[in-house]
Length: 144
Image (cartoon, rainbow, N blue to C red; front, side, top):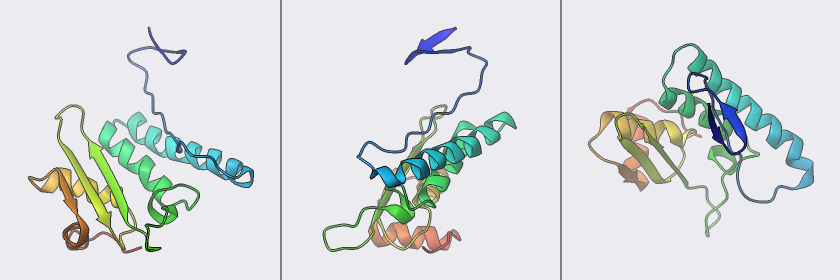
């Protein structure tokens, strides 16, 4: 058994941990936030339990959070200094050490999917701004 953060986990057990953010939430959003984290974890866990990859599970969990306006991700992102939503996302495959990210992305519903495209379909690690938006749209991602 391995012990981390007080939890005992057998090496063969599937585990996914979802973190909903480090900031303070208004008390009226606590229930929604906890529910959202649970839904995200369940989505990722289902992929793992069916033999899916950790990267697929993480991406799916983050999509749930990006689609939930309670979280500072995707739809719920904090506005920039001029009052617009610009999103960033990154993903990495621990087996291959490949990674991909997007920054300053506008008008794309799920930035994590764009980051995955950068990782899987380009030789880049990070693409930003309009170039990231064009790549996302060229690969069929939905606008926000």
